[in-house]
Length: 410
Image (cartoon, rainbow, N blue to C red; front, side):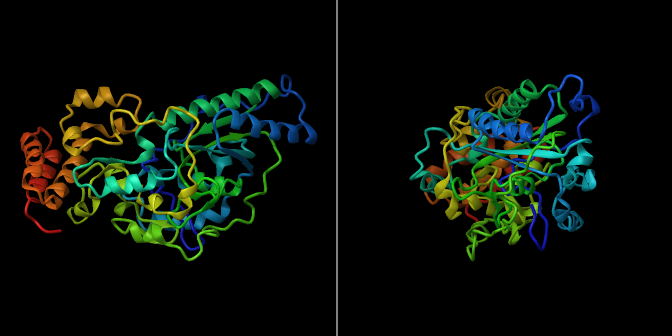
């Protein structure tokens, strides 16, 4: 995710990251067939752009914007972020070079990007008190805290389906055209494109912010070969323009991952550590993770703009498997069969049972250290002892660390 000084592309919640791969030739829709497509004069293009905005809202997207493909301003910062190793062991972040900042290289023929955002607060959320509730759970050592976006259906599936429906409507209107839809699934600078399309501005935590919706939304794009008129809402919006002197996101980050405004070092980020990182979690960071077992919402939870966060009109993001209220002990007891079955259709499933147990062991260790009631510690200790001989060396290491936390000081 980028700033004027430095570029950062790792989402601070991110668990929103998925290994990126360039599109295969077979996956890219063919360029428009002039023989079958309808003529698109300037008036027709303008009308189509209006229709795209309308269709997007009908499909559950909170806002849509259209921009060109020039992200040259982001290239230097992106390269510096990669050179500094801030992507950790996410090798795919560096694998595609500057294609992230060059949409027309990623999908040849692209001249415009349709950028959308979709709210993900569950539809029945109490918008007045949800932040207080989430903060309270984070302060309860025995609770298992899963990032809000990951408690329901996998957003990749929801977004891709809706983006495809939007592309289908465009096809119905103008005939075949060249396009490719993305949502956190390819080397794309999503926040830069969204900002340029007028969907918001980049906050100091590197996420996109909106005055009417905070930052609790997903981003998606359709790269198109149609020269649509661009939206200019975001043309003069600079990163952090509406953040002012506020830096609560930096102050509350449990591991200090927001090393400077607009720059996240993934190697320190709880989202990276619990989702992207495959090995042992560095011991120096384990105590700081608290009870966060998948992702981290702190930088969003305490951002003043998220008092305007809006619930989703879709039911897909409603919590499943009590992921909004389960205890560490409860989730640590899941067998691999439980994990794979219960989390079918969930973004969490891709980390696998081994890393799930690794993360929970860290949470249990922190809970053992922070829980004063000896009786309350017993089920935590018993849960860890039951996994002490787990076949995975990674799990055993984190279990032993966790057991050693009882009676230790932070």
